[in-house]
Image (cartoon, rainbow, N blue to C red; front, side):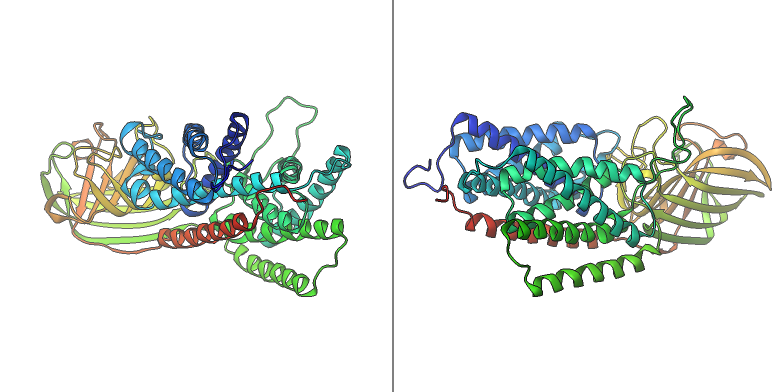
Length: 521
């Protein structure tokens, strides 16, 4: 019961534990879907998710126990959580280091991290508060059969999976595999049973539940669900390992094409079920709007699907006078040379996975120094550092910071900000004869910090190691200038993701304010 004169009373200890568990699950889900999936498009370690879930549970559990529920109190608790989280990342135990420190650079921690983390965690709190109030205010139907609810969840789950999966497959122009449909059914049935128990089965519940389920599908696909299984032939009566030529959907395929289809179809199917349950006719304008949205989404998806796997492209060229290091690594003693460099690279995002699509790198360098000619050809990006010493941005990084005290690359150089940085494996030739294969190469642009004010560097050979046949066992080539065409969609992701977060926040604030807090007679 609510205490007189308060926005909402403190809960009994048992209810605090239940509410805290719901907030923790929904907040970490919101963080995964809207923060790391839709906006940052990265994939932290599994330790991140577990540690952060317990942090959310701790802060919100104590805050709810001490101060109770409410919009303002939830915002204050979220602000405290965001501050604790940010300080923890920055100073105490940054999850993800040392292999991937770029997840916790200044931009991701303070510039975008603070507002995004506040927004996504508060969304989880608001959704939990709406469900909590809704369940308390909704009369209990003692005559409702659990078997009937299970049957309805199975029937609607099958309908959602078949219709949504079929439409998204048509829009993408490819079949995701039987396993994809089976796993989505496993996600959908328990979600519907849980959702109906908390939110009911009316029209409002259908709309909010459809959007939530759509993001659950997209989030699972982003972090856990590649497409293409099972591969053929299907293993049945054999012990041989099954084939697996699977891949992940890229950002455009998942978040731009598939997610809107998920939202429209799931909201539509659940809304029709709610209308049928309430024996109310479907409004013609609503039906027409729904049909129009489906048509637009399918048309857009069919157009975009022809693009195939889509990442951020970079093309870079440098030619003419250059300098080649003549002493040991980073001795900064150079000889004049003539050199050309051509790079075509594609950044496929920051998802941690051994499965494609991976970043692509096509690098060709030709260096003439002291009467010798060297050719470096790299057509394979290094997805991960072989010793796990630091990130390689899965091959290609755009607008990144490394070296210096960043934990990425060598500390022999100052911190370098690069609009393009890449790691690859190369074949090296001297005077037309191959002298080494599988040689690590690193290329980077630089705003400042390179010797002599150079703006482009190519490193051939392992740091601290030697490649026989190269001057002093390695090649370090510097150019004073370069030309580049680099596509960087980070700003677009921040804007689009931020707008989605803001829209969901406003919608939930509206719903929570309208939701009664006492049982309905």
